[in-house]
Length: 261
Image: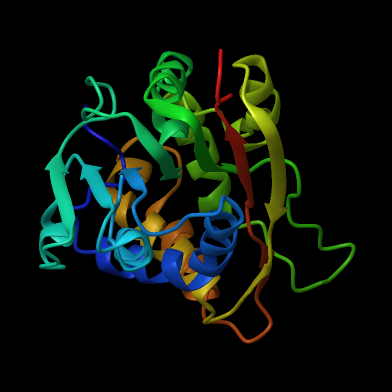
């Protein structure tokens, strides 16, 4: 499968840096709440820049196993960490051989048309009492509101991106649905937390928006979702001192496979 935000794009390193700065601390906090320790067998799907895979290797070594996958592993290969098993893998294909004590994915399933089948296979790859942590966006629940803050801006290009992604099968509220999805699949100790922040001009949040928009520039303009002048004006707005835009909500949902079924 070809993904919209290709790891081969020149904007990918900027996206990975922004994602790590914005979300790694929260991801690690949830991983710690799962009780992760030396000896655990871990799988990370769609490992991207590898920051979480590196953290997992530090936590479960020397007795554990960390497998991290992506459709393009160039950034994972660059880690050069012998404790991490890097696999070129599409999540639509059969998962690496398990079972696993922990499976984590961040911003992976939302891009899939058959995400429900993939989630079923992920749950099946858990060891008894194994933990699943999935993190996905809800991008629709809290749009910018200039009535609250005159600086809040809903960029024309960002609205165009929402239409573009919806046309390609994205469920822009999928993160909010995960809590029920976990319960429906029989996971126990299900917990969910939502995180968001205000993206100010020049902030890591603005850097993430910029990287995503720049990578999809040709598709958005060529597809008639936005004009060249609108795009350029919105990119410039990301550096304005008064720019403000609430981020998407990242839902972090964790649950545990029962020890006996």
